[in-house]
Image 1: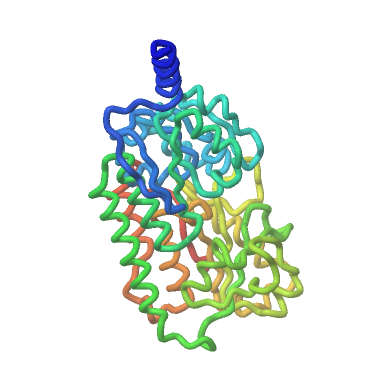
Image 2: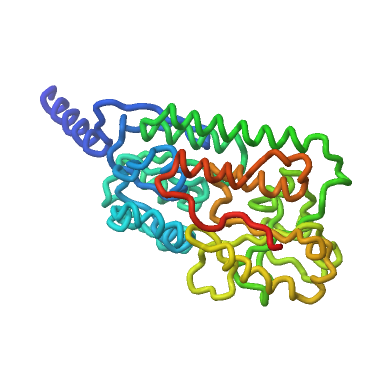
Length: 368
C-alpha cells in the first residue's frame, strides 16, 4: 500500500516537473499590470511582441541576440522603413520566428510555443487581445511580462522600462532612461503650468496615411490627441470622436485651428501618404504635405495663413523618445515658453546614446 502511494506521488511530481519550467535561479519582474512575474535569471530566449526600439534602447546593440521570436508584421508591416534600418545593421532579425500579428488575427499559439521562449514580452493591448491564448501560453511554462508605452503616462513608461532592465540585465541603463524620461516630461509640465486656457491654441491632428484627397483619422484622448492636451493645446477632436476617427471637414473649417499636425510614417504602397521616418528626405515629406493646403477652405485657416502646419513621425509616438515629439508640439504651440528647448537635438542625442542606428531621415518638421 505504502509503495503504491509512493509510486503515485513520484509520478505526480515527475509530471509537475515536466509541465513547469525548471530554472536554476528565478527573479521577479513587476509588469505594468502590477503583477510580480517570476522569470529565469538572464533569459536566453525571448519572445518580443512589440516595442522593438525600446527593447534596443534598454538592452543595447546586442539586445536581439537573445530574441528568438517576434510579431513580425507589427514591425515589418507597420513601420517598414524602421524595420529596414535595423535589419540592415542586424540581419539576425530576418531569421527570427514569426508568431503572427494579434490585431489581424494571425497570431499562432503553436508558433509561439514552438519557439521555446524563456519569457514572452508583450504590449498590454496584445495581452488583452490574446485572452485565453495568454493563459495557454503561461500554462505551457512561458511567463508573460506586460509592458505599456501605449498608455502615454510617465508611470507606465517607467514601469515598462525598469521591467525591460530586469529582463535584460540592464538595470542601470533602464533606470537612466526612465529617469531621463520622467525629467523631460516634468520640464514640459512646468513650462505649460502657467499658460491660461484662453491662451492655448486650437489644434487639429490628422493621420497622413491616405493623402490629402481623403480625410483620415484624428485623435481624441489618446495618441496625438492626448499629447496635444498634455502640452497645452486645445484639441478640436475632443468631444467629437471616440479615440480615433475622421473629423467632418466642415467642422474643422468652423473650428479654424491655429496649428495643424499631420502624422506621417513609412507606409508601403501608399503613393500619396505623408512619408516620414528613417532615410526620408524632408523635401519629400514637404511634397506630400503641400496638397493638404489645397483642400477646400484651408487657405482661410489661421494655421495655414500663419505657416503653422507641421508633421510628426507616427512611429515615434508611445516610445521612450516620444518626449521629443511632446517638446516639438509644445514649442510649436508655445514658442516663447520653449525657446531654449531643441527637440531635434534631443532626438539626435537619444539615437546617438541609446540606439544602434544613426539618426537619419525626417521625424519632425514645419512646412514653410
